[in-house]
Length: 118
Image 1 (cartoon, helix red, strand yellow):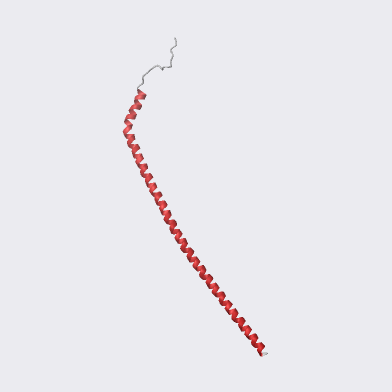
Image 2 (tube, rainbow, N blue to C red):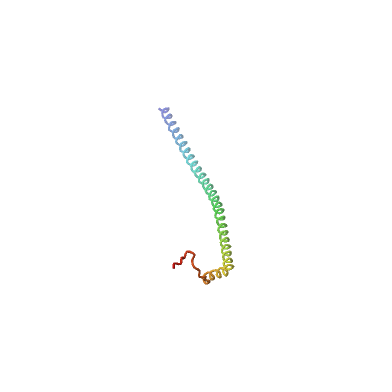
């Protein structure tokens, strides 16, 4: 009986060692999973920051060029307004004289299509 009891005792000890090894393996697996998750999160954060930086650079380039375009448009508009104003002042006098002479100087003439019936 003692040999049976020793055999059972050895089986129980072997079972306990197997349980311990299994628990230890589960702990290592959990630890590796946590570590992998942390590494993945860090990598995702790094990638996100990199992409955001690239986006901000592109946005700055595009918005900067739009700002330059806007300034150019304003400059061209101001130049056009100045040209129109100077043209107005230069031609105003002669245009007014032509207009007034056309309105005020009337030369009565018989229309060529008019038939005088007697």
